[in-house]
Amino acid sequence: MVAVVSTLSVLQRTIDDVSKVQNNLLNQQIQLSSGRKSQDFTGMADQSQQYLSLDATLGKNDQYLNDNQLIETRLNSTANSLTNIVTIANSMQSLIAQRRTGVSNTGAFHNQLNGLWQQLTTELNASVNNQYLFSGTKTNVPAVNTATFPTLQTPGVPDSGYYQGSDQDVTALLKDDTAIQYNVRADAPAFQNLFAALAIAKQADQNSSDNDFKKSYDVLQKGIQGVISIQAQVNSNKVQATTVDSSLNNLKLYMKGIQENIGNTDVVSVSTQVAINQGILQAAFQAFAKISALRLSDFLR
Image 1 (cartoon, rainbow, N blue to C red):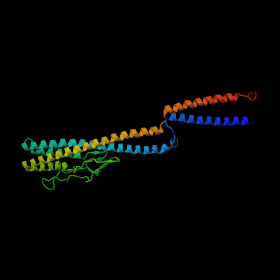
Image 2: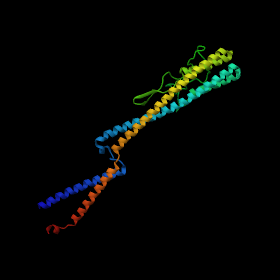
Image 3: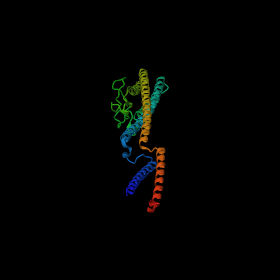
Image 4: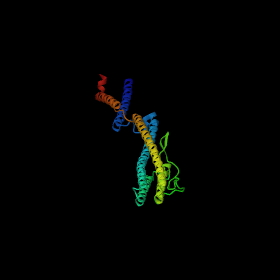
């Protein structure tokens, strides 16, 4: 009787062990088919908090990358407008030089000057996604007045009477520790000089004043140099944004690698465990089959 009880106990433990192996095998097969170590966070044990923390950081990282893409689009559009503005200003210089030498007459000069003013206002009223680039924080309003040719409050002195935007700049956070002021305002001294040159040139044409033409030319030259300086700053911001994006993308790859190590199946390791457990089950089932085939008389011999 003792032998029978003992054998029953061993058999019960064997059955329990086989059940555990079956459960392990099922879990491992799910891991292989899904590519995940666990279908929920409970299977990650003490690594679940790290996984969730990485997930939150990756989400924030992606938000920075998306925001930076919009910033870079605005910077690129701003840079294109500035390039066009320099071209327009150079054309203004040529026009004034021709008027001074008599190559261009009063009627032609007036029309061409008005056309260059319209081109300048078009560039300074450029927008991206319905937001004006040169209006400061007042992005829903065109930066400059397109209805009235520029005039000066004080003769010969540049001012921002043409400007309709705000006097505040736009600051963006490229990542946690990096903020830049990336916008360009149309009331910057460089643009004030361009508009002043237009006003002075028109007055010079009306008065046939070579001194005023010269002053207009000189003010225009200062404006061009100012715009070139602004271009350099915009290009610097573009480089900084690109560098930050590169670091964010590298960090993203690193964090995703850690997250995958935590959550993804180690195919080689799990496949090995599956093979071992299948072997154990096969041996166990073969043993049970032999035991099941035994009769009481086999034990009594």
